[in-house]
Image (cartoon, rainbow, N blue to C red; front, top):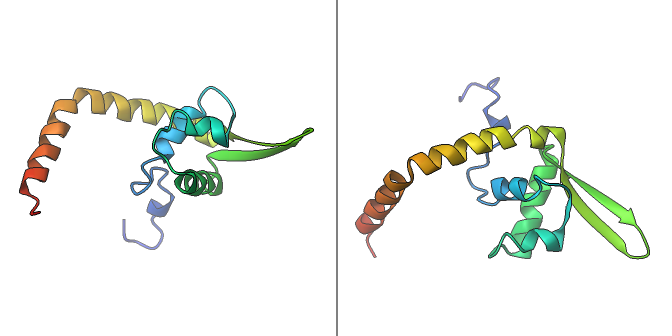
Length: 116
């Protein structure tokens, strides 16, 4: 993992970006505008959504398309590479469902040990 030729920096799952997988899910059924993404992603700030979309675009998972109609419109859509992540996301979601109680217990145990 620490070898200079290791591809670990290319790992598609960004641990620090809690919104990336949710954004991919939101784009699963087709392109969406920025404001349309904010509806299901309750609680995300415009700044966080912008940063996550830019990262996903930079990494090749999302494409940004500008449409010149009477009003300027920007949409985001999954690329084939991004669509390829939906299967692994399904597997991660299934694993989470199977281990939900254990995960909650571990988090609660960890919270009870944190000094205030």
